[in-house]
Length: 279
Ligand SMILES: NC(=O)c1ccc[n+]([C@@H]2O[C@H](COP(=O)([O-])OP(=O)(O)OC[C@H]3O[C@@H](n4cnc5c(N)ncnc54)[C@H](OP(=O)(O)O)[C@@H]3O)[C@@H](O)[C@H]2O)c1
Figure (cartoon, rainbow, N blue to C red):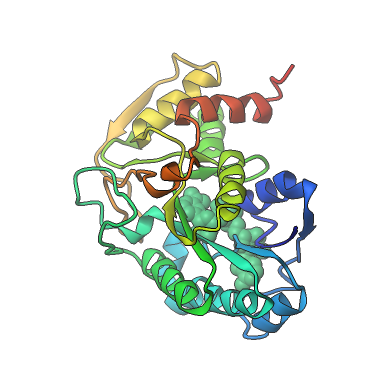
C-alpha cells in the first residue's frame, strides 16, 4: 500500500512513519507539501496514494486563539485540500482530530455521536476540518484523539520530566480530565482502522482516563520519582478555553476490534523507550 503522511515531522507523523515502514510511505516535508495552499490538492492527487493520513495541523492551541486565520487556513482549509486530493486519487483518508471539539460539560466520557461544541479557535478550526473532509472525500475517517505524547516530540510528558529537573515542586490542575494517548498506539490503531473499510468518525485514545494531576503523578512515579512533590491548583492561565472534563470513549472503533491499551501501560512503554530503559 502507498501511504502519504502529512505532518511527518510532528510527533504523530513520526510514529506513523515508523509503523508504516512495511508499506511504501511518502513523507513530504512541509516545504514540499504545505497543506494550507490550494495546490496541496493537486500534489496529493499526483502522488497516487492508496491511503492519506493528515497528521499536519496547527496544534498551538493558544497560538490559534491569537491568529484564527492561520488556524482555519491549516486546520480547516488544509484538511479540505488534502481530502480533495485523496478523493481525486481514489484513496482513503484519515483526518486526525481532537477532544477539543467538545465543551467538556457532559459530565461523562464523550462517544462519537455526542454533540460537538468547541470552546476555542483551535477546536472550532479542527471541527471545520472534520466537516470539510466528510464533504470532500467519500472514504474518509475522522480519528479524534487527545493528550498526545510521542518519541522525539515535545508534550506534557516531556514538559513534566524537564520541569521536575529544574524546579523543587510543580503545580498541576486537577479539574482537567482527559485521555492521554501514546502516538505509537495511535499510529497502529489508525492503520488498523483504515483497513476496516468502514469510514466514519472514531475516538482513538488509550483506554481509561485521568486528570492532569493524576497524569503528572503517574509520569514522575513511572520515571522513578515517587517522592517528587506535585500540588493541585484550580487554574492554569492560558489564552484558550479548554474543555474541563472530556475523556473520549472509543465506542465505534472497538466494535471493529480496534482498541488501544490502557493509558498507564502506554505511559510505561513510552518512558522505557524515552529514558532508554529497554533491555
Ligand atoms: N498534541 C496533542 O495533544 C493532540 C491532541 C489531540 C489531537 N491532536 C491532533 O493530532 C494530530 C497530530 O498532532 P501532533 O501532536 O503530532 O502535532 P505536532 O507535533 O505539532 O505536528 C504537526 C505537524 O504538522 C506540520 N504542519 C503545520 N502546518 C503545516 C502545513 N501548513 N503544511 C504541512 N505541514 C504542516 C508541522 O510542521 P512544523 O513542525 O514545520 O510546524 C508538524 O510537523 C493533529 O491533527 C492534532 O490536531 C493532537
